[in-house]
Amino acid sequence: MTDDQYVAFGLSPTSGKPEMLNSDIVVAYYDKDDGSFHAVDYSVTARSQCDGTYGMCPDERVNGRNDASVIGGERRNGVTSITFSRPYETNDQLDMPISRYSDPITVIAAIGHLNTRKEANYHDDFVTKSNVVLDFTSSEGNSCSTLVGGGQETPRYLPWPANIIPRGTTNFTATIGPTGGERGYSALTRLADSPSWGLAWWINDLLIPEIYVERGQTYYFTVYGGNDHLNSARYHPLYITSSPEGGFRQKTVDEQNREQVFAGVSYSKMGMPEPTAVGDMCEWRHTAMDAWEDSLTFEEYKDTLYKKCDGDLAGSLVWTVETETPDLVYYQCYSHRNFGWKIHVVDSGRKERQEGNNRGSTLLPTPLLASLLLATTRLLR
Image (cartoon, rainbow, N blue to C red):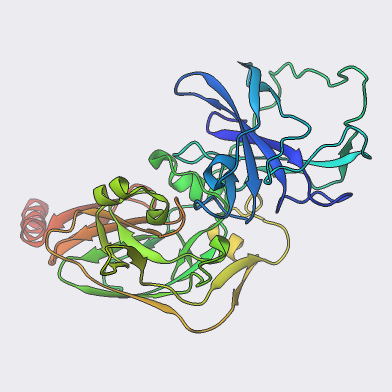
């Protein structure tokens, strides 16, 4: 695993079948910031990152206890080895008991990315598919082979060019969909340290496009992110924010106060925040397996998906861009981090010159652009 990844290992809730949902796992990772190794007790109640109630959550965040502890760790030649322990019986309601006298138990494993909280997003790199069992009653010695490293590196893939919605578009439709693996969200946002976790915003049927808006203009977002606030995997209100990672609902009051919200959140008389752009859910889904590795272009990838909508009652977000709005803001998910991407804010009457799909744009005031064109014409004469 890479520096920003974790490995999860634990017990499937179903005998004879590897299932991540409702499983009991330990997440282990290497913290590159201080060189430490960690093992954290997790429970999985939804196929999403933790929102403080549901998702892939550390037990301590959902009124449980961390019963895992690190014995030792090593990172050498590209291989991370972490040894940890967990009691057979923890008396924690979030943990599955491991009886020393039971039949072999189906185990599961996964690899995914850590978010900025150093918590595990739902797996996006590897997960066990076949039935693997361990006999926890065995008293025989350790028969696991030791990895020596130096093997083949994880293949890297060329990212798809960034999708762009240019200035002039005032109506947007927001749905959710897959992130496109190492060619999509992760590659496009890597400089922003924004790991994907399996789902992302699709705006006007494009995966996390960069949007250009104009100060003084009004923009209309039709939002199909789901309205089941009791199920975080189906609750993705859209909001516009200064935060490159979003997830307003997960943040402390101090963190919320430091974040600038431009649209999509209102406050009750008691001062409690509520998302406003909440509607039925439309989702891009895979027709078969996730085909991002074999899709050389975004268009090829999109052809492997289909859109499923649970209803046609959409949420609505209306945003008039104020004069003092910063040059760069973000459309994000109220419930989850790392879901959306950039909105470029420009002044009225300025021209855009695209510098290629992945290199952003250079903005020239109209009078300066006219002067440059006039000077060029004179030189050519």
